[in-house]
Image 1: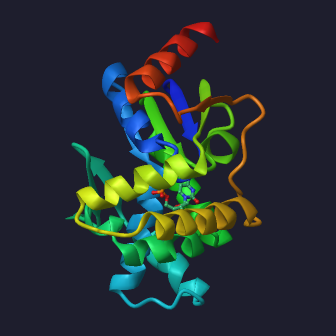
Image 2: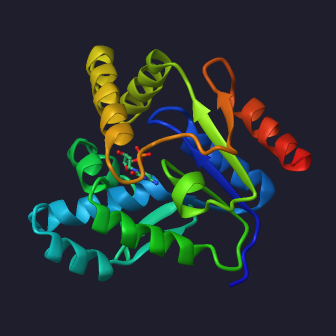
Length: 218
Ligand code: DC
């Protein structure tokens, strides 16, 4: 298998992973893969098809027959554009549960590994540097204070016409952090050789520049 240069970006919700990863990939002309969007797309499929989340056999069968693609910044589920649909409140509420199912993670990691053959990529998620690509060329762990992350998520929601209260968003992020960090399989944790960047008081360009600088250092 021929591997390109792999940059893994992990961190909690709202740390700025997808914005940083997307901009970094653009600057480097690398392919960007949003692994969270893959869990979201499959969660959307479960909701649409009324699949019982307790029915592991059906879930596995369904994921094995699912096609997820990224094209020109859009996310396609079985050839349908679901870019906006996977950001819904319903998906938000169920995705932590779906992504904590070991059988699902195993298949998803497999799909992710196959996506990068022959490509230089930036992939963001929770377990990219620890589980999906333990041999990634560069591993970045992004963090930000929980208040800042809740502020960003509230702002992002407002721009989509969702007017949640800051306090509710804060609570939801706390819950999701806990679920993502305490699950048995691939919990969110910092890889030993990852470099942590606190994004609280930094803009996207500063962070992207920092990562590009780090590529030359290691
Ligand atoms: O980054 P996000 O909010 O789009 O991720 C959606 C959910 O998927 C989140 O609850 C954590 C989970 N996830 C995961 O378990 N592993 C990944 N590599 C990416 C996301």
